[in-house]
Length: 109
Image 1 (tube, rainbow, N blue to C red):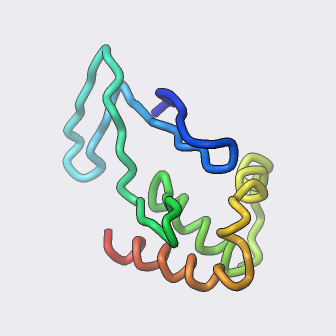
Image 2: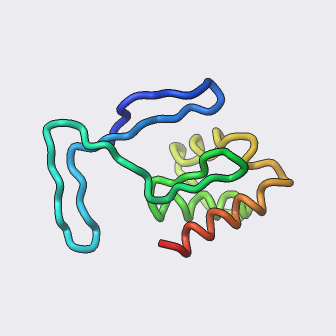
């Protein structure tokens, strides 16, 4: 998966994603292409009109743990990603509702 372009504003950047190879984790079927294949996030929902997403289940679980305040050891790349979460996501009055939305996504898949 790699970036295939950007749109949106400085504060709410929407990054389009593409892949050249997609593999199903259940049956191992592969879709391979020389041209970029548009990639749609499976863990995607909306919270008050803003996109709330995760790349995969591990990313989703990481977001839930971080926002819930669980004490975990993060590698430097993960820590940098968590420190740049949007302000609306980490505000105290939104946090529990965001966690609820993330858990709902986690349980639906």
